[in-house]
Structure formats: C-alpha cells, structure tokens
Length: 292
Length: 273
Image (cartoon, rainbow over all chains, first blue to last red; front, side):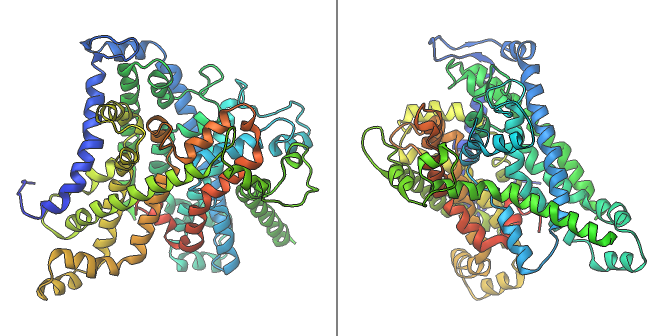
C-alpha cells in the first residue's frame, strides 16, 4: 500500500494526534525506560544499562508472577467458558420472560470493578458475609472459609469475583453463536430422532469455533491486565501470593519503590504476553471465520 | 417421566444461575436500605430507610461526603466522552468513506494497550505539564479510552450504511461534514447512542488511571470508594458502601434496561453481530 496524502487526512488528524500523544508516545517512552536506570526515589542520573532490567526481572521474581498471572487467567477462562456455555444452552428462549431473565443476569457485566470488589469483600466477610454463612450452612467449618488474606484462598477469592462479573458476557456471546446456527438444521435433526446430546456434540459444539475465539480474545486481554479487583480484594497479598505481572508493575512504581525502569520493564512484559495471546487468538479467529 | 426429571433439573440450574449472578446485586440494593445494626447483627427484621444514602452524602469532618466524587466522576467521564466523540466521528467517517489509509486496527489496538505501559510516562508528562489531579488532565487522559473505541465502532456502523445513500448525497452536493451529521449519523443513531453510552461507562468505571493520576481535587467515585474500603472503621460500613455501589451503577442500569439488543455487539467490538 502506497501512502498518498489527501485533504481527507484532516478528518483523521485530531483523533490521530490524541492517540499519538497519550498512546504511542508514552509507549515509546516506556520502551526507552526499560533500557536505562531511572528511579525517582532516590533520584539518580539516568544511565544506560542495556538489557540489565530485563535480565534482573527474568532471573528474579518473573516466573512467580507469571505463574500467578497464568493460573488466574486459565482458571477464569475455563470457568467462564464452561458456565457461559451451559448458561447459553439453558437461556435460549425468546419469550418476554426469558429476555427479562437474561437482562437480570447480565447485570454484573459492566459494573465498576470497584463495586464488584466491594460486593465480594462483603460476601466473603467473616461471620456476617453471605458466602461465609452459606458455606457454614453446608458444613464448611473454617470461619471465614474464603478469606482474601489467607494464602490458600486469596487467589480463589479473586477468581470467583471475576467469574461472577464476566460469565454473563461469555454467556451472551455463546448465545448469539447458538442462535446463528440455522434453525432448519436443528429441527431436522430433532425430527430424525437425534438425541439431544448428539445434537450438542455434532451440531452445536462444532459451530462454536468463531464465538469461542472471540471470547478468548476479549476475556484473555482483560484478564492478563487484571488489576482493579486484586487491588480492592487483596492488594497483591498476602505477601506476593496474588501479585500478577500488572500488579508487579504498579508495585515497582506507585506501590512505593518509584523505580521507573522496573515498572516499565514489567509493563513491557505484559505487552509482550498480550501480543502473543492476541496473535494466537486472531489466527484462530481467522481460521474459524474461514470455515464459516 | 424422563422428560420431567430433565425439566426439573434444567429449572434448578436456571434458578442457581439467576441467584448467583443477580443475587449479589439484589443484596447490595437491600443493604443500601438496611440500617447498620441490622447488617452487623445479620437481622432481616428491619424497616427500610434511606439513612445510608443520607450519611453517604453528608458533608463534614469524618463523613463520606460522597457527592463531590460523583460530581468529579460525572464531569471527567462526561467531558472525555463528549470531546472524545467529537474528535472520533470525523475520523470514523474518513476511515469508512474517504480516501485515507486503513487505520481502523491501528486505532483499535490502543484500546487493548495495557494501561500499565502508558501510566508512568503519562504521570511524568502530566507532572511536567501540571495536569495531575485536574479535570483537564483527567479528561484528556480518558480520551485514550474513548477515541480508539469510538473510531472503531462508528467505522463499523458507518460501513453498514448502503453506499447508494452516500453517493446520492455526494451527487446532491452535500459537503463531507453535512453528509456526516445530516445523513450518516441519523442513519445509525441507535448504534451511535450505544457507543456514546458505553464510552461513558468505560470512563465512569475506570479505576487504575484515576487511582494514580486523580489525587484529591479530581478524585473520582471508584477511587474514593476504594479508599473508604481500605480505611479502618468506615471500611466496614457496608450500608453506606452499598449505597455508593448502587449510585455508581445507575448509569449501567439505565443502559441495560434500554439496550440489551446492542449489548453484545457493543462489548465485543463489533465482532459478534
């Protein structure tokens, strides 16, 4: 594609300037900051250090943070896809009541993550928290059974809150995938006496490739950059048990240490991981769309 | 009989879904109307009151004084949405109908840019320009959320308009701006309104940027809420916090009530029709 300037570019210019000033320029600055020693506290002259920042992090706390990030992303994706798909199969009706019910369960989707964190902090709360009460009713002895401050349940508490917020969106996306399957196909199979489980196995699931990739793309990019709920529920703790890569980046700068280079290096790792994930998903998406 | 069992099982799972996903929101609404003593003693034997909302808004020492944060949030999210949309519409129109390079994916990619990568440089730049903790600074900052999304979505909606309409307008001698505002925009008005409202919600809910860059005088409602949650004493005033949660969710509830049809398309960046 050859670039040809025309007056039409004036229409794009304002938006482009905004993106360049608060998007591309900061991004380039971040990349630059990863190759220097740049710290606000204590103030030191900026010196070029090459790949030292990367090596320091890769040989130090990187694997731990990566492990936490990946386990959170994997657990959330698996649960959201499973529950979302089951829900989509159940709530396929188009009657007024069913539409209203779908509206109700899509309530959590765009709630502020602070509200979600606050809600779940209350739900998990010792003695009076509804989750605590419910699990006590089921006979789970520990009080509180899910504690945001305990090493074994802190990550789980974040995962549950995230699954609660985003499963409805996954459900709606799967639902649109199911509704896109030609009605005649499903009806013909039913008339021919195909059991509903085989219909699921041979008609519905093979048609889910496209929407599944969209789910992976949307949810994956959000989950790899999850910060808000961690900040509200656990503050990365106890210790570093829920500190994912994004939180590490925050911790290295505004969390108290004010090392610009460390924070930038962590954030570039986030960027690299997201890019790998998006490229893989986009490849799958292209394949899925071609088959359709 | 087999059918009966299946039906009951399905109904049961449906009820579990509704209770799990909608229950916490109902609980939040109930708690916002529940006196503090009733929440602490876990008693359901109470008369609904609005005292939580009153005490949330009350100003003075050691009070929530939450009204101020709502006003901040509304100004910042509203400003960013208005300016972001004004800037994005001509760009989306140009990408859809004029002879410019195909920059759609370039714009969209900034919606997926992790906030962490731009946060520090912007903090340094904003300090240099004196924009930290100001309305102007926050509005300008939030345009990084609004512009990529609006350009991408409006380009999709514009592309759906038949080309004959566009060509007819050109032949009639309309200028580009006239075509944009008098023909294209009215033709996809629902999509446009949904895009604006979603942009507003993105900004209204945003937490990470605001946490670092909004300080005290431009502090937004989510940041204030998170500070109250972390403060000993008021951090466990669930009544007032629930009231804050309900008030913060009103823009969302309005949206869901009217536009369920567009929800999936808007939130999947147009990937799901």
